[in-house]
Length: 589
Image 1 (cartoon, rainbow, N blue to C red):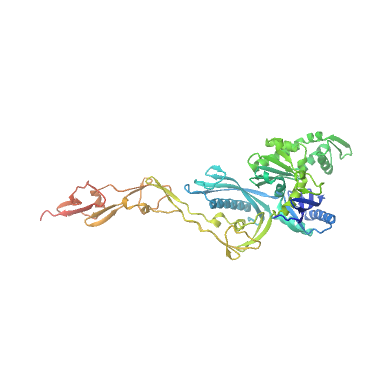
Image 2 (image 1 turned 180 degrees about the horizontal axis):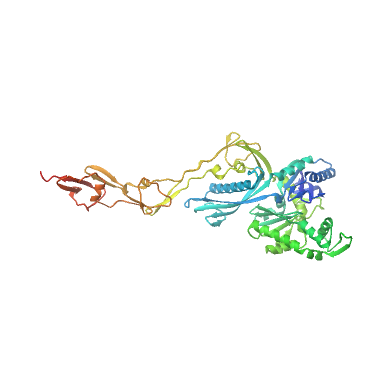
């Protein structure tokens, strides 16, 4: 929800610089009331992680005090962002066998996603030295591909097949990154207004709503690293980092022209502003070169950087994106966009450098401009829109679980972040049994799983119930359903049996049962995928002797055999409801 009329103090704490600005929401526009950019006095950050708390806090404090003087007001809270380079992305894939005769349901899909995310969390926990998930926040996940058997599909809902699978990418943020940001704020007497991720903040204002269905790579080229975020279908689904950026270009300039680092940094910045650049080398010589000459000299390092960025984009996206948007101070390097376009094999017009100039709804402090300004402005607007990450602490079976989420997290999210598996949460329905009986397909459904019993603050809740900070959740794991089970006798009808009356006693004769060519008893369990035939027996009179107890030894006289009162022989056929008589007739009477 937009905080109309409210102001926010936003901080972008980068590897080389810290930018601070105060932005006010004014109707449909945003106004920058004051800003300040300050370079760190020394190397205090590496790869998005604060290494020197006190030095970073000193820079933030200086910015805070300067803006407070400009606006004549005290700043009490700050909106900050975690660097994209600090994120971990973990891919996970899971497959599930299903009945080929049942449609895939929403619950099947949700359970499959949950199982894949459980695998991602377990994978990260195993890589962690402590072997648990407590050192990370899961800040989101997105399906990359769905599969029905071996075929990739856009949507599994309503499909039929023998197996379904999904491949997801899950994103995690180390707890130390968040805690170091909070410590810096605390050192400067600042509370936390909001926390977001740098790629999300930049993407919110660079990738406009009408563009978000497109497959776009957002590349933030800073001093130490080049951070990459890939958007598709309305959201950012993958993050990556190349450990190379503007500093390597500066170092190459210093090497080629014998400059100290500060002078090399100044020359690099001048390349995008002037046709010629004048500088003094470490020997005291003053030189002046055309910009084109300098960029040609450092061409190999520009080519190397663009090659690495292109490879990472293709690795994350799996294909060439529709376009690339570049932000950050390093994106201004002449020739870099063209080189990146060439390595991605896309038209150079599809690689653009975005700065504040294209943000028509941003006003004030017109000197705060260029691609460097995008992320800090995005942090401020993200906070004013209420789209930032929120922190929750809940207790599941008395164990504390920390959650960091942009959307309202649910009970299901909490259970997943606690390491509960899909089987524990949903249970697995018993597999259906399928077989053919006399050529006709038969299906025996498995039992449904008994889902987990979940209560929150003492009340039974649905898995989609939003959680609140401090919630106490009780969890009793689900129970799997039993697989479909059936015996052959359940499929024998009265028509399949033969009823006989032998010497006044009634007998029921079972049919001939064969399972995949093997004769079986009616009491046996039906195997899965069996081919079953059930046929009434073809019987002759001699078969009766295997049914009744009849001992001819020692008997005298004539053996009499009758079917329905008519004399019969051993080979005469018998059929359903026949009456049979077999006895010895004494000839001596």
